[in-house]
Image 1: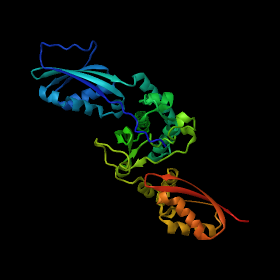
Image 2 (image 1 turned 90 degrees about the vertical axis):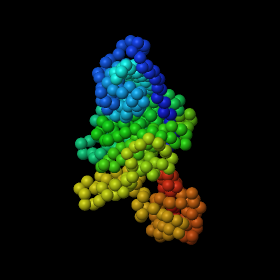
Image 3 (image 1 turned 30 degrees about the vertical axis):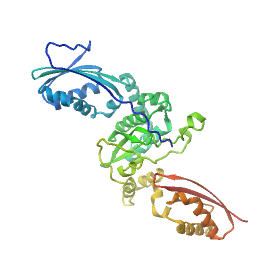
Image 4 (image 1 turned 180 degrees about the vertical axis):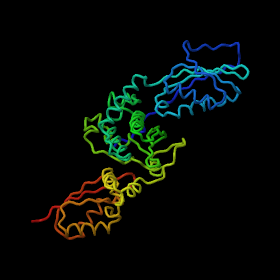
Length: 383
């Protein structure tokens, strides 16, 4: 699993303000007139429509206090972009000018985008085709999120050159930085009818972007980039691609508390407070007609390892488990061991304490970010 901070392209802004009737700033040769607004709310809505239509040059008229306009226009632009995360994260830069006389102002905006309308149309077509193959009428929203997650992380590799930022580049080349992963996740989840947004913040290695999704009224974090199963350096060494590696769910539908272990953010996002494991346990209640689907989903994404009967808390409990398995002549058994850093030492001690002549081998891997290990033990018995 690669843990790149990714690279978010900073949005470039140039501002020119003129409060005079005589001084004409004719910076844009072709300009669409988007009409007049008398409140900042109307101005925000008009602006959002222009950005969402991918307008590169447009004019807005405002009838109101010019000082309020100049003081709040940048905030208004950000709010208009927040209405569509896809547009906000493919916008490369924008420039605006204000010309005011009395209570009348003209705002001219020039915007540059990282993805053309034609490229976005290709993304839309690919997404619709992929979802037609991935989704079935019987799927619930939880299952839809999983298949979309799996489709993305097994088809994309992290862009080591740090030059591919869009969903179009992700689909066209199979590579992208975190921004491309998040944009593609946004497109696919939204098309599937799942409420979704793009979150941004920082990790140890720098700026980073990921998604948040809403299921059954609860919001969760979903980091597709960090769930990419390709190991660090695979591209350079020629080792197996993500298509050949096990899918990870380490950053799959996490709470704020879980995510803050190695992600940080300052923007305001919907609170994510509900444990997804608890939610699946509730949905998998035997009294529900669709309980089996949620029980299977819990197993598929590895949350079954959180159950008490599959978790070993300390060396004493590990020794008891080993003795029980050897008495039953088990040739293979699996469990989650909480003090993961002591696994090798404690497992050796448990087999020695059993005083039964056997050979064993163990494979293990970290489980999430809690320090525990998923352990698989194979035992060979003397004839």
